[in-house]
Image (cartoon, rainbow over all chains, first blue to last red; front, side):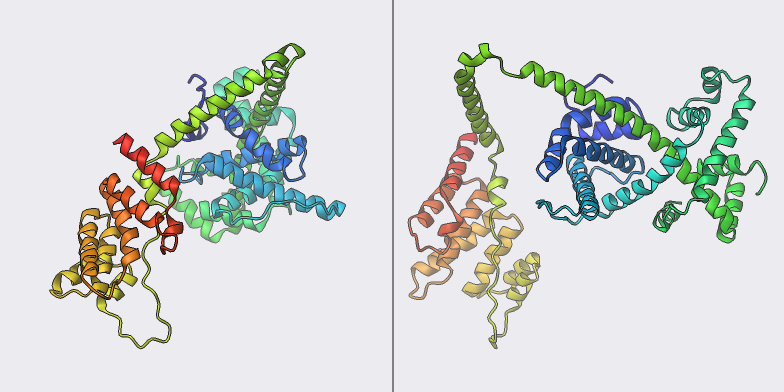
Length: 203
Length: 254
């Protein structure tokens, strides 16, 4: 797909959901919404760097909502992103206030977020923890798992790309890497009960 | 289930690649084996986290590229000393474009619906402490059963003014502008020949809405003028010159 001047919400969510031209979809999200989200943070005592962090996290939450079909297009991407960013920035301000005892005023009032947005944000907080465990795996493990689960490459392609002697050797390695990650997850006290509840519902 | 095949088998389960029998067997085990349940949850989490990590990397790269491009754009568009003479000209041109754009926007956006959305539905006044026995029509109207109002009114050959007004309001609520006009015009006529006048100002206002609904913009305009000519009119604050202008636009668009 060629880069549209202004792709619609439906086009963007389809590209993300189908993982087709996803970089174009993300670029469109940035073109269309970065300014608004940055303004939200800047007008509430945040810096440009704060805004960049909040926006990056918010984009990930939105992607997660689209992938798990929690975003079904009833609301616009703009309003969902705004709601996520606002929620995230309020949490960040609270964190900063409690750690640095800052007393600057901010004008954000907490809205009633849709349950889907709140759930996606909570889910992401838990996933961050598992993502950190993933980052602790060795470089080869990370590459195999990334190519298989994110890039969705066939074992044969991964085998060629990473120069494994055979697909079976690669399969064994992939098994060990995934096992190592799931074992770390199971052994983590950081995985909240809330997420386990969410996962049970999804099953 | 506790052999080396466990993880690939569970992956096939999550991917829906198992036969019905295998799937049912795992599902049965999941209800009793908490260890297996924890394994499945950990696997789901791990796979989701790997995928999200990929998205996170792509998002971070896109964000970096976006911010770099934005920086370059802002350098390109920052004013130089040579551009100063054109400054006022640019402001004037921008203002003209904005005005033309605004006028076009208003023209395009003005629709009967844009006017109609500001209307308030008629609310039957609540008489606190009154022993009045409310009519069935009034009760039906209060419970927003407008079709019932119309049906009950049709059965009443001697409709009183209260009920007739509610009948008009029910037609309005159901988007039947023509029928609403008929009822409200009957009320106007009754009031003209009666010493006790009821719903005069309400009729003025809701006729405006009914005419608008029917696309009779000229008549709607007359109603606005009638209401705006009396500063003590109950609905004086509810209609303004902006509404009058919008109706003129609607006439033009017609």
